[in-house]
Amino acid sequence: MSSESSDQVLDYPLRAPSALEPPAEWAQLRQGCPVAHIRLPSGDKAVLLTRYNDVRQVLSDPRFSRNLAQDGAARITTNEGGSVFENPEAASLAGGESHQRWRRLINRAFTVKRIQALQTKIEAMANQLVDAMVKKGPPADLVSEFAFPLPVWVIADLLGIAVDDRDKLAYWSNAMLTMTQFTQEEVNRAQMEFAQYFMGHIAAKRANPGDDLLSELITATDKEDVLTERELLMTGQGILVAGHETTSNMIGKMMSMLLADRSRWEQLLANPSLIRTAVEESLRFDANMGFGLPRFISEDTEVAGQPLPRGTTVVCSMSSANRDESFFEGAGEMKLDRAPNAHITFGAGPHSCLGQALARTELQTTLQVLLKRLPTLELAVKPEELPRREGLLVGGIEKVLVRW
Amino acid sequence: MGMRVLVEYEKCCGAGQCVMVAPKVFDQRDDGIVVLLDETPPPEQYKAVQEAVTVCPGAALRLEESA
Ligand code: HEM
Ligand code: SF4
Image (cartoon, rainbow over all chains, first blue to last red; front, side, top):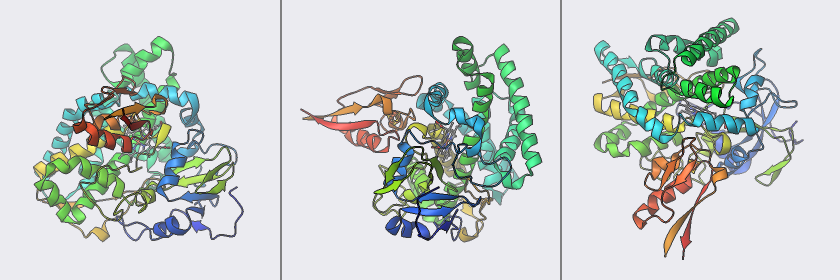
Protein backbone atom coordinates (compact mmCIF):
# COMPACT_ATOMS: atom_id res chain seq x y z
CA MET A 1 0.00 0.00 0.00
CA SER A 2 1.75 3.19 1.05
CA SER A 3 5.50 3.52 1.15
CA GLU A 4 7.53 1.36 3.52
CA SER A 5 8.72 3.24 6.53
CA SER A 6 9.23 2.52 10.15
CA ASP A 7 7.58 5.84 11.05
CA GLN A 8 4.96 5.80 13.69
CA VAL A 9 1.46 5.01 12.39
CA LEU A 10 -1.33 7.20 13.80
CA ASP A 11 -4.85 5.94 14.34
CA TYR A 12 -7.22 8.04 12.27
CA PRO A 13 -9.44 10.02 12.77
CA LEU A 14 -7.49 11.89 15.44
CA ARG A 15 -9.28 12.86 18.62
CA ALA A 16 -9.76 16.58 19.40
CA PRO A 17 -10.05 17.86 22.98
CA SER A 18 -13.51 19.40 22.36
CA ALA A 19 -16.01 20.22 19.62
CA LEU A 20 -14.39 23.56 18.76
CA GLU A 21 -10.71 22.78 19.29
CA PRO A 22 -8.24 21.15 16.90
CA PRO A 23 -6.42 17.89 17.71
CA ALA A 24 -2.99 18.67 19.19
CA GLU A 25 -1.28 16.54 16.53
CA TRP A 26 -2.04 18.88 13.61
CA ALA A 27 0.49 21.55 14.46
CA GLN A 28 3.18 18.90 15.09
CA LEU A 29 2.42 17.12 11.84
CA ARG A 30 2.50 20.33 9.82
CA GLN A 31 5.84 21.11 11.42
CA GLY A 32 7.59 17.79 11.33
CA CYS A 33 5.63 15.20 9.39
CA PRO A 34 3.62 16.67 6.50
CA VAL A 35 3.13 13.22 4.93
CA ALA A 36 2.05 11.06 7.88
CA HIS A 37 1.19 7.39 7.97
CA ILE A 38 -2.23 6.61 9.39
CA ARG A 39 -4.41 3.60 10.09
CA LEU A 40 -8.10 3.92 9.15
CA PRO A 41 -10.95 2.38 11.17
CA SER A 42 -10.97 -0.53 8.69
CA GLY A 43 -7.34 -1.29 9.61
CA ASP A 44 -6.14 -0.25 6.13
CA LYS A 45 -3.24 2.16 5.87
CA ALA A 46 -3.26 5.58 4.28
CA VAL A 47 -1.33 8.83 4.27
CA LEU A 48 -2.45 12.09 5.90
CA LEU A 49 -1.68 15.54 4.50
CA THR A 50 -1.94 18.50 6.89
CA ARG A 51 -0.22 21.45 5.17
CA TYR A 52 -2.14 24.00 3.09
CA ASN A 53 -0.05 23.79 -0.07
CA ASP A 54 0.07 19.99 -0.07
CA VAL A 55 -3.68 19.62 0.49
CA ARG A 56 -4.39 22.14 -2.22
CA GLN A 57 -1.99 20.46 -4.65
CA VAL A 58 -3.56 17.02 -4.31
CA LEU A 59 -7.18 18.22 -4.33
CA SER A 60 -6.59 20.34 -7.44
CA ASP A 61 -4.97 17.50 -9.36
CA PRO A 62 -7.55 16.29 -11.88
CA ARG A 63 -5.85 12.86 -12.07
CA PHE A 64 -6.91 11.89 -8.57
CA SER A 65 -10.49 11.18 -7.55
CA ARG A 66 -12.32 10.51 -4.35
CA ASN A 67 -13.64 7.24 -5.70
CA LEU A 68 -12.24 4.53 -3.44
CA ALA A 69 -14.15 1.75 -5.19
CA GLN A 70 -10.94 0.81 -7.01
CA ASP A 71 -8.51 -2.07 -6.68
CA GLY A 72 -5.91 -1.38 -4.05
CA ALA A 73 -7.66 1.62 -2.49
CA ALA A 74 -7.93 1.68 1.28
CA ARG A 75 -11.33 1.04 2.81
CA ILE A 76 -12.45 3.56 5.37
CA THR A 77 -14.63 1.26 7.45
CA THR A 78 -15.52 -2.39 7.38
CA ASN A 79 -19.23 -1.55 7.19
CA GLU A 80 -21.26 -3.72 4.89
CA GLY A 81 -22.31 -0.93 2.56
CA GLY A 82 -19.06 0.99 2.82
CA SER A 83 -18.99 4.77 2.96
CA VAL A 84 -20.24 7.22 0.36
CA PHE A 85 -16.72 7.18 -1.06
CA GLU A 86 -16.86 3.50 -1.91
CA ASN A 87 -20.13 3.52 -3.83
CA PRO A 88 -19.33 2.21 -7.32
CA GLU A 89 -22.50 3.70 -8.71
CA ALA A 90 -21.43 7.18 -7.78
CA ALA A 91 -18.14 6.45 -9.53
CA SER A 92 -19.29 7.61 -12.95
CA LEU A 93 -19.88 10.99 -11.38
CA ALA A 94 -16.63 10.99 -9.44
CA GLY A 95 -14.08 11.73 -12.13
CA GLY A 96 -13.13 12.18 -15.74
CA GLU A 97 -15.16 13.42 -18.66
CA SER A 98 -18.55 12.13 -17.55
CA HIS A 99 -17.98 14.06 -14.35
CA GLN A 100 -17.24 17.26 -16.28
CA ARG A 101 -20.38 16.85 -18.39
CA TRP A 102 -22.49 16.21 -15.33
CA ARG A 103 -20.99 19.13 -13.45
CA ARG A 104 -21.66 21.60 -16.28
CA LEU A 105 -25.29 20.54 -16.34
CA ILE A 106 -25.89 20.74 -12.60
CA ASN A 107 -23.98 23.96 -12.29
CA ARG A 108 -26.85 25.73 -14.03
CA ALA A 109 -28.75 25.63 -10.78
CA PHE A 110 -25.84 26.87 -8.71
CA THR A 111 -24.57 29.97 -10.44
CA VAL A 112 -24.36 33.02 -8.22
CA LYS A 113 -27.18 34.68 -10.16
CA ARG A 114 -29.53 31.74 -9.62
CA ILE A 115 -28.63 31.50 -5.95
CA GLN A 116 -29.11 35.20 -5.36
CA ALA A 117 -32.58 34.89 -6.83
CA LEU A 118 -33.23 32.21 -4.23
CA GLN A 119 -32.06 34.38 -1.35
CA THR A 120 -35.46 35.95 -0.53
CA LYS A 121 -36.97 32.48 -0.26
CA ILE A 122 -34.17 31.30 2.02
CA GLU A 123 -34.70 34.37 4.21
CA ALA A 124 -38.44 33.61 4.47
CA MET A 125 -37.68 30.02 5.45
CA ALA A 126 -35.19 31.17 8.11
CA ASN A 127 -37.74 33.63 9.49
CA GLN A 128 -40.38 30.92 9.62
CA LEU A 129 -38.05 28.71 11.67
CA VAL A 130 -37.25 31.57 14.05
CA ASP A 131 -41.00 32.30 14.42
CA ALA A 132 -41.47 28.75 15.69
CA MET A 133 -38.53 29.06 18.10
CA VAL A 134 -39.84 32.34 19.48
CA LYS A 135 -43.34 30.96 19.88
CA LYS A 136 -42.04 28.02 21.88
CA GLY A 137 -39.69 30.23 23.89
CA PRO A 138 -36.12 29.69 25.12
CA PRO A 139 -34.11 27.59 25.51
CA ALA A 140 -33.99 26.17 22.00
CA ASP A 141 -31.77 23.68 20.22
CA LEU A 142 -30.40 25.62 17.30
CA VAL A 143 -29.49 22.38 15.53
CA SER A 144 -32.81 20.53 15.47
CA GLU A 145 -34.98 23.65 15.33
CA PHE A 146 -33.05 25.65 12.74
CA ALA A 147 -29.85 24.21 11.29
CA PHE A 148 -31.26 20.78 10.42
CA PRO A 149 -34.42 21.86 8.56
CA LEU A 150 -33.19 24.97 6.70
CA PRO A 151 -30.82 23.33 4.16
CA VAL A 152 -33.21 20.49 3.40
CA TRP A 153 -36.07 22.94 2.81
CA VAL A 154 -33.80 24.77 0.38
CA ILE A 155 -32.88 21.55 -1.45
CA ALA A 156 -36.56 20.55 -1.61
CA ASP A 157 -37.28 23.87 -3.26
CA LEU A 158 -34.39 23.41 -5.68
CA LEU A 159 -35.67 19.98 -6.69
CA GLY A 160 -39.28 21.15 -6.96
CA ILE A 161 -40.42 18.97 -4.06
CA ALA A 162 -43.69 20.00 -2.39
CA VAL A 163 -43.60 21.63 1.06
CA ASP A 164 -45.66 18.72 2.43
CA ASP A 165 -43.00 16.22 1.43
CA ARG A 166 -39.92 17.98 2.76
CA ASP A 167 -40.00 16.35 6.20
CA LYS A 168 -39.91 12.94 4.54
CA LEU A 169 -36.94 14.16 2.55
CA ALA A 170 -35.23 15.28 5.76
CA TYR A 171 -35.70 11.85 7.31
CA TRP A 172 -34.30 9.96 4.31
CA SER A 173 -31.36 12.28 4.02
CA ASN A 174 -30.54 11.82 7.68
CA ALA A 175 -30.82 8.04 7.47
CA MET A 176 -28.76 7.77 4.28
CA LEU A 177 -25.84 9.71 5.74
CA THR A 178 -25.79 9.40 9.51
CA MET A 179 -25.04 5.72 9.45
CA THR A 180 -24.22 5.50 13.13
CA GLN A 181 -27.71 6.39 14.38
CA PHE A 182 -29.57 3.96 12.17
CA THR A 183 -29.42 0.22 11.62
CA GLN A 184 -28.26 -1.02 8.22
CA GLU A 185 -31.85 -2.10 7.62
CA GLU A 186 -33.17 1.40 8.26
CA VAL A 187 -30.51 2.85 5.97
CA ASN A 188 -31.41 0.42 3.19
CA ARG A 189 -35.11 1.12 3.63
CA ALA A 190 -34.53 4.88 3.51
CA GLN A 191 -32.51 4.48 0.34
CA MET A 192 -35.23 2.41 -1.27
CA GLU A 193 -38.05 4.70 -0.22
CA PHE A 194 -36.17 7.73 -1.43
CA ALA A 195 -35.44 6.07 -4.78
CA GLN A 196 -39.08 5.11 -5.19
CA TYR A 197 -40.30 8.56 -4.27
CA PHE A 198 -37.78 10.30 -6.47
CA MET A 199 -38.48 8.17 -9.56
CA GLY A 200 -42.15 9.07 -9.14
CA HIS A 201 -41.19 12.69 -8.71
CA ILE A 202 -39.12 12.62 -11.93
CA ALA A 203 -42.11 11.16 -13.80
CA ALA A 204 -44.39 13.87 -12.40
CA LYS A 205 -41.96 16.61 -13.41
CA ARG A 206 -41.57 15.12 -16.85
CA ALA A 207 -45.36 15.31 -17.33
CA ASN A 208 -45.60 18.70 -15.72
CA PRO A 209 -42.33 20.66 -15.62
CA GLY A 210 -41.85 23.56 -13.21
CA ASP A 211 -39.08 26.12 -12.88
CA ASP A 212 -36.89 23.96 -10.65
CA LEU A 213 -33.50 22.34 -11.30
CA LEU A 214 -34.97 18.88 -11.81
CA SER A 215 -37.38 20.05 -14.51
CA GLU A 216 -34.52 21.81 -16.22
CA LEU A 217 -32.37 18.70 -16.16
CA ILE A 218 -35.20 16.55 -17.46
CA THR A 219 -35.85 18.92 -20.33
CA ALA A 220 -32.14 19.04 -21.17
CA THR A 221 -32.03 15.26 -20.88
CA ASP A 222 -34.95 14.75 -23.21
CA LYS A 223 -33.41 17.05 -25.79
CA GLU A 224 -29.83 15.81 -25.83
CA ASP A 225 -30.18 12.50 -24.05
CA VAL A 226 -27.50 13.45 -21.59
CA LEU A 227 -28.56 12.16 -18.19
CA THR A 228 -30.13 8.74 -17.77
CA GLU A 229 -32.99 8.14 -15.34
CA ARG A 230 -30.49 6.49 -13.02
CA GLU A 231 -28.17 9.50 -13.24
CA LEU A 232 -31.04 11.86 -12.43
CA LEU A 233 -31.69 9.79 -9.33
CA MET A 234 -28.01 9.78 -8.36
CA THR A 235 -27.96 13.54 -8.87
CA GLY A 236 -30.96 14.11 -6.60
CA GLN A 237 -29.49 11.82 -3.99
CA GLY A 238 -26.05 13.37 -4.43
CA ILE A 239 -27.32 16.89 -3.87
CA LEU A 240 -29.18 15.76 -0.78
CA VAL A 241 -26.20 13.89 0.64
CA ALA A 242 -23.69 16.63 -0.27
CA GLY A 243 -25.82 19.62 0.65
CA HIS A 244 -27.91 18.78 3.69
CA GLU A 245 -25.84 17.51 6.57
CA THR A 246 -22.75 19.53 5.57
CA THR A 247 -24.67 22.79 5.70
CA SER A 248 -26.68 21.87 8.82
CA ASN A 249 -23.47 21.03 10.63
CA MET A 250 -21.78 24.18 9.46
CA ILE A 251 -24.66 26.38 10.68
CA GLY A 252 -24.39 24.70 14.10
CA LYS A 253 -20.61 25.08 14.22
CA MET A 254 -20.61 28.66 12.96
CA MET A 255 -23.15 29.73 15.57
CA SER A 256 -21.24 27.88 18.30
CA MET A 257 -17.96 29.57 17.37
CA LEU A 258 -19.55 33.01 17.23
CA LEU A 259 -21.34 32.58 20.56
CA ALA A 260 -18.56 30.70 22.39
CA ASP A 261 -16.72 34.02 22.58
CA ARG A 262 -19.65 36.40 22.67
CA SER A 263 -17.50 39.41 21.72
CA ARG A 264 -17.62 37.94 18.20
CA TRP A 265 -21.42 38.06 18.15
CA GLU A 266 -21.31 41.60 19.54
CA GLN A 267 -18.87 42.64 16.85
CA LEU A 268 -21.38 41.46 14.24
CA LEU A 269 -24.29 43.17 15.97
CA ALA A 270 -22.34 46.42 15.87
CA ASN A 271 -21.23 45.93 12.30
CA PRO A 272 -23.42 43.63 10.18
CA SER A 273 -21.36 44.44 7.09
CA LEU A 274 -18.89 41.89 8.49
CA ILE A 275 -21.34 39.06 7.79
CA ARG A 276 -19.69 37.98 4.53
CA THR A 277 -16.15 37.79 5.87
CA ALA A 278 -17.37 36.32 9.19
CA VAL A 279 -18.95 33.42 7.29
CA GLU A 280 -15.67 32.80 5.42
CA GLU A 281 -13.70 32.94 8.66
CA SER A 282 -16.11 30.49 10.30
CA LEU A 283 -15.59 28.13 7.38
CA ARG A 284 -11.82 28.46 7.78
CA PHE A 285 -11.73 28.21 11.55
CA ASP A 286 -13.94 25.14 11.82
CA ALA A 287 -11.69 22.56 13.47
CA ASN A 288 -14.35 19.89 13.44
CA MET A 289 -14.74 19.02 9.77
CA GLY A 290 -14.66 15.30 10.27
CA PHE A 291 -12.70 12.89 8.17
CA GLY A 292 -11.27 15.13 5.45
CA LEU A 293 -11.21 14.28 1.75
CA PRO A 294 -9.77 11.00 0.52
CA ARG A 295 -7.97 10.71 -2.81
CA PHE A 296 -6.75 7.62 -4.59
CA ILE A 297 -3.31 8.21 -6.10
CA SER A 298 -3.61 6.56 -9.50
CA GLU A 299 -0.17 7.59 -10.83
CA ASP A 300 3.16 8.09 -9.06
CA THR A 301 3.49 11.62 -7.77
CA GLU A 302 5.35 13.73 -5.27
CA VAL A 303 4.11 15.82 -2.36
CA ALA A 304 6.22 18.00 -0.07
CA GLY A 305 9.32 16.54 -1.72
CA GLN A 306 8.32 12.99 -0.85
CA PRO A 307 7.30 10.38 -3.40
CA LEU A 308 3.71 9.12 -3.24
CA PRO A 309 3.60 5.87 -5.14
CA ARG A 310 0.65 4.85 -7.28
CA GLY A 311 -1.90 2.95 -5.22
CA THR A 312 -1.59 5.16 -2.14
CA THR A 313 -4.75 6.39 -0.48
CA VAL A 314 -4.36 9.95 0.76
CA VAL A 315 -6.53 11.78 3.28
CA CYS A 316 -6.46 15.57 2.95
CA SER A 317 -7.23 17.42 6.17
CA MET A 318 -8.77 20.71 5.10
CA SER A 319 -9.26 21.75 8.73
CA SER A 320 -5.56 21.41 9.42
CA ALA A 321 -4.64 23.11 6.13
CA ASN A 322 -6.90 26.01 7.13
CA ARG A 323 -4.80 26.51 10.25
CA ASP A 324 -1.44 26.39 8.51
CA GLU A 325 0.58 29.26 9.98
CA SER A 326 2.78 29.43 6.91
CA PHE A 327 -0.25 30.31 4.78
CA PHE A 328 -2.63 32.24 7.08
CA GLU A 329 -1.35 35.06 9.25
CA GLY A 330 -2.48 34.48 12.83
CA ALA A 331 -3.98 31.15 11.73
CA GLY A 332 -4.94 30.22 15.28
CA GLU A 333 -7.07 33.30 15.76
CA MET A 334 -10.60 33.91 14.51
CA LYS A 335 -10.64 37.30 12.74
CA LEU A 336 -14.10 38.17 11.47
CA ASP A 337 -12.76 40.68 8.94
CA ARG A 338 -10.10 38.42 7.39
CA ALA A 339 -9.82 39.10 3.64
CA PRO A 340 -8.80 37.59 1.38
CA ASN A 341 -9.53 34.22 2.93
CA ALA A 342 -8.55 31.37 0.66
CA HIS A 343 -9.67 28.61 3.02
CA ILE A 344 -10.01 25.18 1.50
CA THR A 345 -13.19 24.03 3.26
CA PHE A 346 -14.99 23.53 -0.06
CA GLY A 347 -12.08 21.66 -1.62
CA ALA A 348 -10.27 22.91 -4.73
CA GLY A 349 -10.08 22.29 -8.43
CA PRO A 350 -12.38 20.27 -10.67
CA HIS A 351 -14.24 18.64 -7.77
CA SER A 352 -14.55 21.63 -5.50
CA CYS A 353 -17.97 22.08 -3.94
CA LEU A 354 -20.59 22.77 -6.54
CA GLY A 355 -23.00 24.10 -3.93
CA GLN A 356 -20.63 26.60 -2.36
CA ALA A 357 -22.46 29.72 -3.53
CA LEU A 358 -25.65 28.23 -2.09
CA ALA A 359 -23.95 27.18 1.16
CA ARG A 360 -22.50 30.68 1.55
CA THR A 361 -25.89 32.27 0.92
CA GLU A 362 -27.53 30.00 3.50
CA LEU A 363 -24.87 30.80 6.08
CA GLN A 364 -25.01 34.54 5.41
CA THR A 365 -28.81 34.54 5.55
CA THR A 366 -28.71 32.60 8.82
CA LEU A 367 -26.55 35.32 10.37
CA GLN A 368 -28.62 38.16 8.94
CA VAL A 369 -31.86 36.72 10.29
CA LEU A 370 -30.55 35.61 13.69
CA LEU A 371 -28.70 38.90 14.34
CA LYS A 372 -31.84 40.83 13.55
CA ARG A 373 -34.43 38.64 15.25
CA LEU A 374 -32.49 37.34 18.28
CA PRO A 375 -29.76 39.88 19.07
CA THR A 376 -29.55 38.72 22.69
CA LEU A 377 -28.77 35.15 21.65
CA GLU A 378 -26.27 33.27 23.82
CA LEU A 379 -25.13 29.71 24.43
CA ALA A 380 -27.02 27.93 27.24
CA VAL A 381 -24.11 25.50 27.77
CA LYS A 382 -20.36 25.92 28.23
CA PRO A 383 -18.54 25.79 24.88
CA GLU A 384 -16.36 22.88 26.02
CA GLU A 385 -19.51 20.92 26.82
CA LEU A 386 -21.05 21.17 23.35
CA PRO A 387 -21.77 17.54 22.44
CA ARG A 388 -19.96 16.32 19.33
CA ARG A 389 -21.61 14.26 16.62
CA GLU A 390 -20.09 10.86 16.58
CA GLY A 391 -20.61 10.21 12.86
CA LEU A 392 -17.44 9.14 11.15
CA LEU A 393 -17.26 11.22 8.00
CA VAL A 394 -18.67 14.65 8.72
CA GLY A 395 -17.91 16.42 11.97
CA GLY A 396 -20.49 18.49 13.71
CA ILE A 397 -22.24 19.32 16.95
CA GLU A 398 -25.20 17.25 18.05
CA LYS A 399 -27.05 19.95 19.91
CA VAL A 400 -26.50 23.70 20.38
CA LEU A 401 -28.67 24.88 23.27
CA VAL A 402 -29.26 28.64 23.19
CA ARG A 403 -31.36 31.23 24.98
CA TRP A 404 -32.20 34.87 24.26
CA MET B 1 0.15 51.53 -16.17
CA GLY B 2 -2.94 49.52 -15.38
CA MET B 3 -3.77 45.99 -14.45
CA ARG B 4 -5.08 43.28 -16.73
CA VAL B 5 -7.13 40.26 -15.66
CA LEU B 6 -6.19 36.92 -17.22
CA VAL B 7 -8.46 33.89 -17.20
CA GLU B 8 -7.57 30.26 -17.91
CA TYR B 9 -11.03 29.07 -18.82
CA GLU B 10 -10.21 25.35 -18.81
CA LYS B 11 -9.30 25.60 -15.13
CA CYS B 12 -12.55 27.33 -14.10
CA CYS B 13 -14.76 24.98 -12.07
CA GLY B 14 -17.70 27.34 -12.09
CA ALA B 15 -18.07 27.88 -8.38
CA GLY B 16 -18.67 31.59 -8.80
CA GLN B 17 -16.45 32.86 -6.01
CA CYS B 18 -15.17 35.61 -8.31
CA VAL B 19 -18.73 36.79 -9.01
CA MET B 20 -19.46 36.99 -5.30
CA VAL B 21 -16.32 38.96 -4.55
CA ALA B 22 -16.07 41.22 -7.62
CA PRO B 23 -19.44 41.33 -9.43
CA LYS B 24 -18.40 44.36 -11.49
CA VAL B 25 -15.57 42.44 -13.09
CA PHE B 26 -16.82 38.84 -13.29
CA ASP B 27 -20.03 37.14 -14.32
CA GLN B 28 -20.95 33.53 -15.13
CA ARG B 29 -22.41 31.79 -18.15
CA ASP B 30 -25.50 29.61 -17.67
CA ASP B 31 -23.28 26.62 -16.94
CA GLY B 32 -21.26 28.52 -14.36
CA ILE B 33 -18.07 29.17 -16.34
CA VAL B 34 -16.63 32.61 -15.70
CA VAL B 35 -17.27 35.57 -18.01
CA LEU B 36 -14.81 38.44 -17.83
CA LEU B 37 -16.80 41.69 -17.88
CA ASP B 38 -13.86 44.05 -17.65
CA GLU B 39 -10.42 42.93 -18.72
CA THR B 40 -8.77 46.13 -17.50
CA PRO B 41 -10.77 47.14 -14.43
CA PRO B 42 -10.40 50.58 -12.83
CA PRO B 43 -8.09 50.92 -9.79
CA GLU B 44 -10.96 50.97 -7.29
CA GLN B 45 -11.65 47.35 -8.34
CA TYR B 46 -8.08 46.08 -7.81
CA LYS B 47 -8.63 45.00 -4.23
CA ALA B 48 -11.76 43.00 -5.04
CA VAL B 49 -10.12 41.45 -8.12
CA GLN B 50 -7.04 40.54 -6.10
CA GLU B 51 -9.30 38.85 -3.58
CA ALA B 52 -11.06 36.93 -6.37
CA VAL B 53 -7.67 35.81 -7.73
CA THR B 54 -6.63 34.55 -4.30
CA VAL B 55 -9.82 32.66 -3.47
CA CYS B 56 -10.64 31.18 -6.90
CA PRO B 57 -10.87 27.43 -6.22
CA GLY B 58 -9.73 26.59 -9.74
CA ALA B 59 -6.69 28.91 -9.64
CA ALA B 60 -8.04 30.11 -12.98
CA LEU B 61 -7.48 33.86 -12.50
CA ARG B 62 -4.42 36.10 -12.62
CA LEU B 63 -3.84 39.82 -12.36
CA GLU B 64 -0.97 41.25 -14.38
CA GLU B 65 0.46 44.67 -14.93
CA SER B 66 -0.34 45.86 -18.40
CA ALA B 67 1.82 48.29 -20.29
C1 HEM C 1 -21.02 24.39 4.38
C2 HEM C 1 -21.54 23.47 3.61
C3 HEM C 1 -20.75 22.63 2.63
C4 HEM C 1 -19.47 22.16 2.71
C5 HEM C 1 -18.45 22.36 3.83
C6 HEM C 1 -19.22 21.42 1.48
C7 HEM C 1 -18.01 20.81 1.16
C8 HEM C 1 -17.75 20.15 -0.01
C9 HEM C 1 -16.45 19.62 -0.40
C10 HEM C 1 -15.19 19.70 0.44
C11 HEM C 1 -16.58 19.06 -1.62
C12 HEM C 1 -15.47 18.43 -2.47
C13 HEM C 1 -15.48 16.94 -2.45
C14 HEM C 1 -14.24 16.38 -3.14
O1 HEM C 1 -13.36 17.14 -3.58
O2 HEM C 1 -14.13 15.16 -3.21
C15 HEM C 1 -17.97 19.21 -2.02
C16 HEM C 1 -18.50 18.73 -3.21
C17 HEM C 1 -19.82 18.90 -3.57
N1 HEM C 1 -20.78 19.64 -2.91
FE1 HEM C 1 -20.53 20.63 -1.17
N2 HEM C 1 -20.34 21.44 0.70
C18 HEM C 1 -21.30 22.18 1.36
C19 HEM C 1 -22.58 22.46 0.91
C20 HEM C 1 -23.11 22.02 -0.29
C21 HEM C 1 -24.44 22.34 -0.77
C22 HEM C 1 -25.43 23.25 -0.07
C23 HEM C 1 -24.62 21.65 -1.94
C24 HEM C 1 -25.81 21.59 -2.86
C25 HEM C 1 -27.04 21.71 -2.52
C26 HEM C 1 -23.37 20.94 -2.21
C27 HEM C 1 -23.16 20.16 -3.32
C28 HEM C 1 -21.96 19.56 -3.62
C29 HEM C 1 -21.77 18.70 -4.79
C30 HEM C 1 -22.82 18.34 -5.83
C31 HEM C 1 -20.42 18.30 -4.76
C32 HEM C 1 -19.71 17.38 -5.77
C33 HEM C 1 -18.99 18.21 -6.79
C34 HEM C 1 -18.21 17.39 -7.78
O3 HEM C 1 -17.96 16.21 -7.54
O4 HEM C 1 -17.85 17.95 -8.82
N3 HEM C 1 -22.50 21.19 -1.19
N4 HEM C 1 -18.66 19.89 -1.03
S1 SF4 D 1 -13.87 31.80 -8.90
FE1 SF4 D 1 -12.50 30.82 -10.37
S2 SF4 D 1 -13.37 28.80 -10.66
FE2 SF4 D 1 -14.95 30.03 -9.71
S3 SF4 D 1 -16.16 30.85 -11.41
FE3 SF4 D 1 -14.61 32.35 -10.93
S4 SF4 D 1 -12.94 31.84 -12.28
FE4 SF4 D 1 -14.26 30.07 -12.27
